Amino acid sequence: MIRYQNKFALLADMFQNHQRCFSLSLFPLETSRDWHPQAGGTQAPAARGQDRSDRRLRWQVFAGIFFGYAAYYFVRGNFDLAQKGLIDAGLYNKAELGQIGAAAGLAYGISKFLMAAVSDRSNPKVFLPIGLLLSGLCMTLMGLMPWATSSVAIAFAMIFINGWFQGMGWPPCGKTMVHWWSKTERGSVVSVWNTAHNLGGMVPGAMVLLAGAVYFNTHGVEATNKDIWQQALYYPGIAAMIIAIPIFFIMKDSPQSCGLPPIEQWKNDYPDNYDAKTAEKDLTTKEIFVTYVLKNRLLWYIALANVFVYLIRYGVLKWSPVYLSEVKHFNFKGTAWAYTIYELAAIPGTLLCGWVSDKVFKGKRGLTGFIFMILTTAAVVALWMNPATPADQVAQYADKPWFQNPYQLTDFVLMTTVGFLIYGPVMLIGLHALELAPKKAAGTAAGFTGLFGYLGGTTAAAAVVGWAAQHYGWDGGFYVMIGGGVIAVVLLFITMLEEGRHKARIPESERVKK
Figure 1 (cartoon, rainbow, N blue to C red):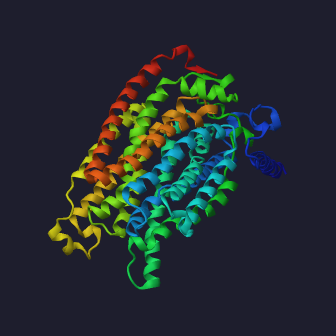
Figure 2 (cartoon, rainbow, N blue to C red):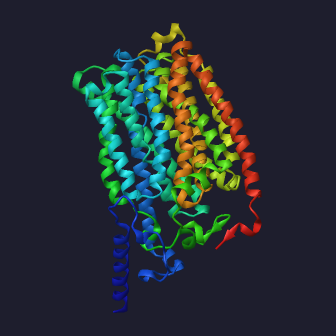
Figure 3 (cartoon, helix red, strand yellow):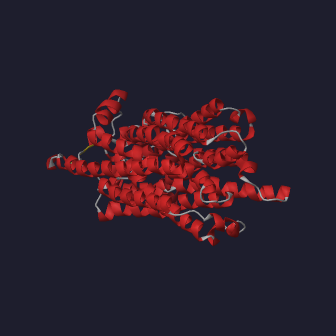
């Protein structure tokens, strides 16, 4: 009889937790802001930490932010895959596409920063899927509606709107991770989560291959870039909108909204300079922006470094379909595979970078990013220096797949290497920003680095690299990217030095306040 009573109590407790977690409002419930050990009959932290339902909730929340953020990348870079088709269709040249592409970085940088401030005071359960739904709708319209690509101005506006909705993806995920995982868990968790955008980034390339197969079955001839650029836009857009629906039902707000204590108490894991009185306190907008962001010198250093890290990340990603097609003689299948593998390689690379950061360098994010960025810049130089298929051999390899062409195979390997290396520094800068601010300001701090990365780096990757390639050839485009890589290395070196000084300034007596 007692056994049945215990089971009934467990089911009742689980049901109570689900009720607390389920909030349909954009802003968190008032009851979720503070946790009291005696409120609602919740168990002590040690006991709760052993409860299977609590562990299941963390896995459920992780699935929500992982697959939700992956879906954002269905419609983040798919326009890049359409660029060669737009050129071949006579709609735009490289300079014009650079102008259009700059809208994404401009909008996303501003949105990620401003939406982060909204996200810090909002419920990620609603915030995350709404942005995904609207972003998918933008790309679907661009693919299906001729007016959406009828001029540079209209296409710029559509990409800008899409970029703004994209800014609603990262902040709620960052907020969720600092609320549900403690400091000693966070490096590994963030590195695993960060592979979500690589998994999502593979999907547009796969959908281009699918569109090519559908075209062949329908028309009986192989598709060209000009034939399937619309599908490169609306296939991923529709998929993103579909995935937004289950994400809403999977996501949860903070542990406190589910009847759990703050993660520091739950896991008995307190970061340096932790103060329980302020860690869970809701901050004013002024406190978030001024005290914990604008006055944080180390945050400024990593934000500036992010500009040039993103210049390489998006310079290679955004222009590789056009570059490989025009210079290295890749067909649309080859460019789609290279684009896809670039993202796939980032998954083990990011995991390795997170592990090295946690286990080898003991949380020294600046040092880890410095080393990975040196290797990334070297790989970009190698990609640039690798010769294209000689003119007298182009016909010989014209009907063969890319992996049977030694020149294209080398390019493929180098693209894979760049993808393997570049996303480690991207992940570390975001993680570093999260750790440099209180949990209630974490999203804004990360958004601040994103503001620099996208407003400066991604915009330059689109507009400056595109302009340089149009007027000075692809050598000019690579000069811009390699120069950015060198500057990123220098700034990450400064960050590494400043990181050590920052930790040294924290008195030993103030490292932990429980």
